[in-house]
Length: 426
Ligand code: ADP
Image 1 (cartoon, rainbow, N blue to C red):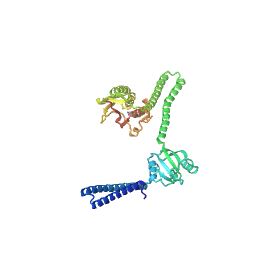
Image 2: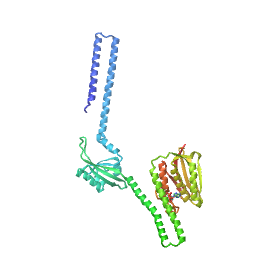
Image 3: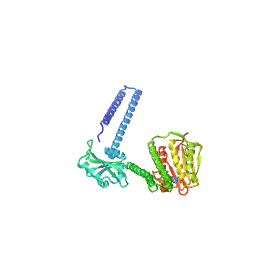
Image 4: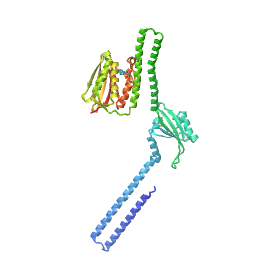
């Protein structure tokens, strides 16, 4: 293997140093033999020259060792694929799937994400086997047949319903490498974007449906009052009462929808106000007691001394507490108790607030979906109670803004506990 110019120069310098030392030693021996130098001075000069020789040997070994290390590293680098492996590592570091496809349509490279998406054994196989969608196949054709640089964006969905926008581009050899033209397929994942889009569409459809029901009923009653029941005064009174409650339901629904959009708008603002939890819980319980009074629901509060102050948005915290306590008052069994408590967490940094009722409980299959918009366990009961199906969704979004989550524990026939944690204020 050829030595680098620097190494050769270093070795030459060492050789010349060695020649000088040998010459000096020979000179010293000569002067000594003709007794031009006395014994002590001779020994001193000899020792100095010997030290120089040792240092020289040491330097020579170090240079040789360094050069051996460099050679080994180079060999290892080449064994691992040299510069090609650097490119492969770079593509492997991209967290989105990338495929390099040759003119024979065989996959010549797949990064880690692509292997994860399409399978471990794809390299060396025909790309069409894995990307069966005709638009992607057309895009690869375009790259090789018409010499296009980019073949546009193609939507791809796999069996697990993950969706991607795939861009197919031409890759030509660069930097003098002897690399033939290849096609690169880059998969940009859009699954969560499509899910959000779908959620928005569903939300508009659900909200319209929720508003249409009371509105249709109002129109029906107006027509009846104008027609068949025109002169029926007792019917007027009955119908007007129903119309009023339907109109109030629409107002509640619109209020809840507005609340949700307001919460979404403020979701990036971190709450900073110190809230007196004790006073707030007492006032919320008074409101909830009014709702549950007719059904004999009683409230019991327990707030530990060291849990009275939390950091929160006061209006939003009030809304969370009202929604949860009023729900407890609405859904708990007649003549039962609702327990509202606040206590510090183990590390004392947070306060855990919980609302426990002695109601019918919620079965497991409903728990995960409880905070979805318009999700109701018992549709008829919720509507009869004037529910909008948005209360717990509002709670969830407010808690997200407070860097907290809503915990629900429930046992059928025993009751439900809703709880959440907030940062404790000193
Ligand atoms: P709603 O306006 O219908 O009360 P929420 O979002 O507040 O809407 O609650 C969603 C559903 O969760 C309710 O319809 C109800 O079926 C159920 N739910 C909420 N709180 C309780 C509770 N404390 N006990 C039993 N079921 C509850």
